[in-house]
Length: 205
Image (cartoon, rainbow, N blue to C red; front, side, top):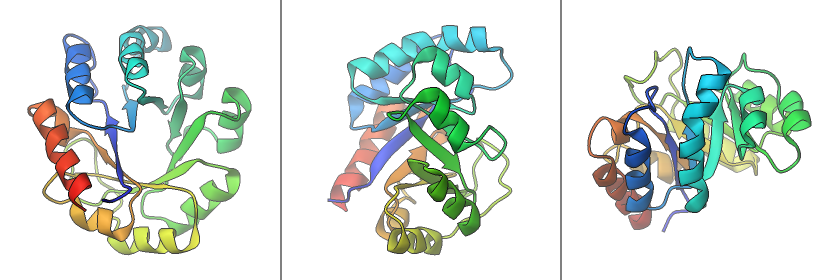
């Protein structure tokens, strides 16, 4: 059994029946964390959309992580924040969100950025994209050697992201990913079926 866990990222549209879909996904198998990722809406609207999702996660003991925005994470009292390279510093997030907050940093395919994030006190680093993805434009291509290198030198967990499906995730798990971050593979079809398929791979390793 691998220690790798599932890190679920929201689609950009979290309105409509999405809360029901999220509940269905989380009830289908183990998920460690859920990242709320919306773009181009103001913080007030984002907070309104986040509230029911945060409640669904809380009742199932799934960590609720806000993408990009330290201020939204603070406003919601979220479990943590995930920072891109332009979304503020780990130090700033720690100062505003406190010691308990989970702070993750996107490091693309860069060993240098990952080391910097680790030294700054990040709780996890995210590497990717490992595979082609339709969720966002891929500017950085990461290889499994990156996960192996990180595991050999660092204690901080690493997340693998980018085009990950139940069919292609096994090498990432084998290379030492602590979490696999998934979005399209779950939301572009039957979410419960997809979570069950990931759970099978994670349990089999």
